[in-house]
Amino acid sequence: MCALMMDNDDYKTVGIKYVEVDWVANGDELECVDAHWKDLFRSKPSDLYINWAAAMQIQFHVSGLDQSFTGDVKSWAKEYLKAFVASAEKRCEYMREKYVIPFQKYVE
Image 1 (cartoon, rainbow, N blue to C red):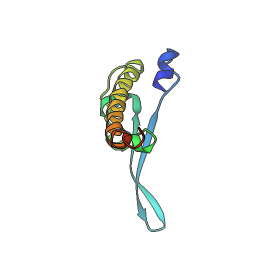
Image 2 (image 1 turned 180 degrees about the horizontal axis):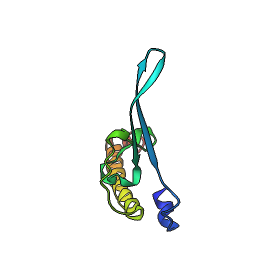
Image 3 (image 1 turned 90 degrees about the vertical axis):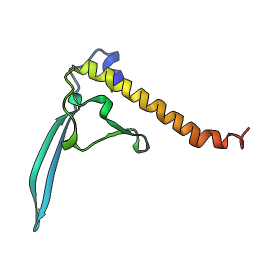
C-alpha cells in the first residue's frame, strides 16, 4: 500500500482507522465498557510489530496504539517502508540461518 501511494503520489485517498470495543458479558447481553478509535497514520512506524508468520500482519491492540506521529501521510509511508525493509532483512537473515544453511549440505 505504501509503495502504491508513493508511486502514484497519492496520499489523500487512503485512510486506515481502527476501532476497538471492550465488552463484558452481562447475563445474556454484552455490555460495552470502553471504546477506542485510532488512526494508523498517527502511529510511529518504527514501533509497529510485523508478524511474519501471520502473513506479514501488523499487530497491535488498538487501545495501545501510539498516536504521536506528527508527520504527513507521505512521510509516514516512507518511514513505514524503512521499518518494513529493516524488519524484512532481519527476518531473511534469521530464515537463512535457521532454514537454509543447516540443510544446504543435503542438496548440494
